[in-house]
Length: 269
Image (tube, rainbow, N blue to C red; front, side, top):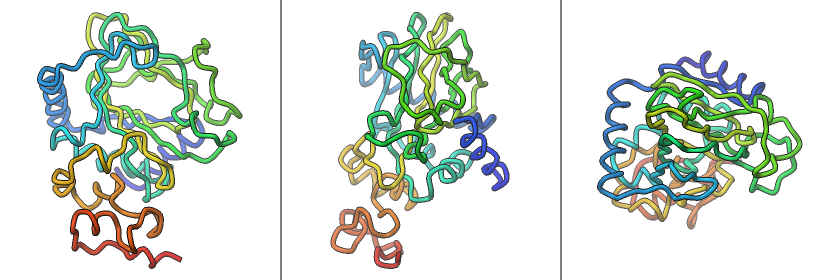
């Protein structure tokens, strides 16, 4: 993705609350992700949570970075991360990384905003910027994410369980939907005969608490295999060289014994 393309996607998110990056994911990566998710579902005996938010016919696998090396390619992907950094900044963090596979018969998820648990007056700058990776085609019939364009500019979050008119974010396999954390949205109903498979790659600003605790959820031996950028995205760096330090060292330096040249936390002023 060129800087000009990233800037155009960032502008669309500022205006409409969302954008779609088409042909973002290379076919070989798509195949490996689909195969890995099916394997994990079988090996871990994953079943639907069966509640009103996560669904009764939706299979979700959480904490993917701890489960297979292929998932390390997602948070740092060159066709997605520049857009996220343009909405938040380069101090952003991985908030959560999970799969969402909607099976036939699933009802539409309640419309919600991903940042509505945060006690901040709206509208506000993006604290959260999330993405949905389409590992299959996303259509209105099979449960494409439903969105309400421009709703990120409203002065409130939706009332949970209330019906709101929305549109499906239809996109072909290999595309990525990216949206502002205040955008009103929800998973669609799957009225087709096939599963809709997506990966939710969610980010938050560096000064916001992550949805999944990456520091405790991922074994340190696995974190040591991450690239420096992925370690930073998972919270093993510091925000603006200050927030999150341990005795004037980054968590990577203190916990992982890293000797790589991380910026000193006192370089920022």
